Length: 209
Image (cartoon, rainbow, N blue to C red; front, side, top):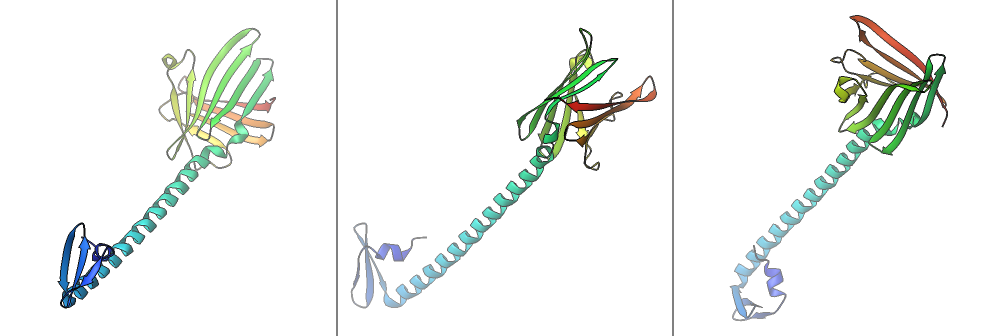
């Protein structure tokens, strides 16, 4: 719809009880009563458009704020786990268990796990702690197991003050738990089914780097 206020802003003259507007080399003339009615209608229409635009902008701002807050809430599931970052060790007569965690960004931690006895590496594992949407995932790839393909464990949000991951379809492990004990100590428990019997292993890890 053309806004007569904008058209007449160029040039306006009055001829025989009519108002004429000069726009793009053309004159548009309206009787006074028609002009008043048209301008009133256009003004009402403009007010409605402005009101609609204000509401649309407000809804857009609310949507962006909500999306940002939701994203922050999702990411916070992994951001709060910075205590995991570092090098952890458990030394015993059986060998040396190592876990090394590095922070790639706010949605991804990369980990490595080794069990070394003498000069032999008996266990080698690559781990990813991933934030995907609302889900926090623990992705484990163990050399020599599951055809070297990754196994994904889901975060159990009901267990607080620790990281607990579960995969009921995987026999061993089915559950992996990381629990902070102190700034330089964490407790790791791995459990599941081995040889048709419940089995578990617990490790107290000390931070060395």
